[in-house]
Image (cartoon, rainbow, N blue to C red; front, top):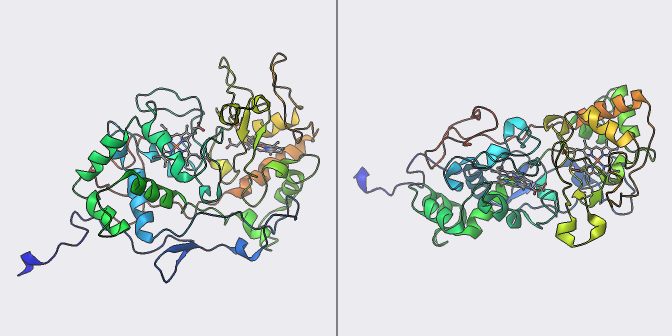
Amino acid sequence: MLLFLALPASAGGFRLSENCPPGFERLADDVCRMVTLYDQYGSLRGRGVGGTRTGLPPRRDGFTAQQIDLGRYLFFDPILSADGSVSCASCHDPALGLADGRGRSTGLHGETLSRGAPTLWNSAFLSRFFWDARAESLEAQLPGPLYAAGEMGNNPDDLLAALRNNAEYPALFRAAFGAGSGPIDTAQVYTALAAFEASLISLNSRYDRYAHGDHNALDAEEIAGLNVFRSFVARCAECHTPPLFTNQQVAVIGTPEPEGLPRDIGAQATFGSPKLRGAFKVPTLRNIARTAPYMHSGRFETLAEVVAFYNDGRGHAVPEDEPLQLHWHIVSPELAAHELDQLVAFLGTLTDERFLPRVPTRVPSGLTPGGRSARAALTPTGEAP
Ligand code: HEC
Ligand code: HEC
């Protein structure tokens, strides 16, 4: 009799994908391994900066397809927040470069946070997280947004109770972590979210095609911009080092705060070093044309404003009574106006959103996928759900 057949894990219509996301291949032991043309090049060490054919730093991969897909549901499900209104995608919106289009993010109750949401592209390669570099892994980063009163406002007990009492999630977690994995715990939640984040890869921009040898992928203006970018005059590549366009260090560059706001001491708080007052993690420039406004608190609206800031002279925006120790690669390059235009043109070649995740049409909680968004609503993409 049909009634006695075991129900599949997809009882409510939710089933985790068995396929690795695009850009990954599935290995014999069922884990997904990232595949990128950069694997043909050696590591950065000893090869200077700014060269096109440099390899990538170590990465997080090796998650299963099911763990990645569970993480996708969690990422878009507002069940993770205290009142069911906000999901990760509220501030890391696929339609806004996995950021939120705001200089400073908006929290659970509409409060303005002190910093902006960084993009999540290529976070698989990062060794430090947050603008002040205070977390050392994707998993260690997660309690930040989940439990901060102003962000998702939750706590571990309520989060786990909501997931365990949900009609769908217990079966989905068993599908991702094995039948004997026990009740849902925070480590599983963090692993699934980290697996999903580590699948957000952007390494196929026009710049990358140029780097791999397609000389027609960039036009003359953009190639000129690349040359300015990696020149010893401008020194951008010393910190925004290809291919990730970050060297993963923190640096004091003297960004002005928005009008009327006190200086954010940044990494001084993380490392306890006064020299790092006002230091921030060097952000990736991947998909930078998609993530305005710019800098930790969104001081600059456009890329033209950013390059003008670097060109206007070392420390020009630092008040005289501010004891900031600017990084030695922050110089006064005195670039001509056309070179600044070329730089902006080059930054536009770093856009590649081909592996944007599918926004689910519905999530296991039954709440609105994505929750409250910076835009009116998230646009679901791809097949159901
Ligand atoms: C209310 C808006 C908001 C929500 C919701 C939110 N974030 Fe963020 N996220 C931010 C802000 C702002 C920062 C930077 C904070 C800082 O540096 O102090 C950030 C930083 C990060 C970083 C560090 C990126 C880097 O390059 O350093 C990661 C990873 C991240 N968030 C992932 C997530 C995940 C996963 C979720 C859901 C569990 C989430 N965020 C929910 C606003 C948000
Ligand atoms: C000494 C290291 C260093 C150098 C050199 C440098 N940057 Fe930066 N860059 C940073 C840091 C650190 C930040 C973040 C600062 C902040 O948020 O206040 C940043 C931020 C940016 C941003 C905004 C990123 C975002 O997500 O908001 C852009 C664009 C940028 N830099 C482009 C350039 C260009 C173009 C050059 C060369 C003219 C350059 N940078 C040179 C360290 C550097």
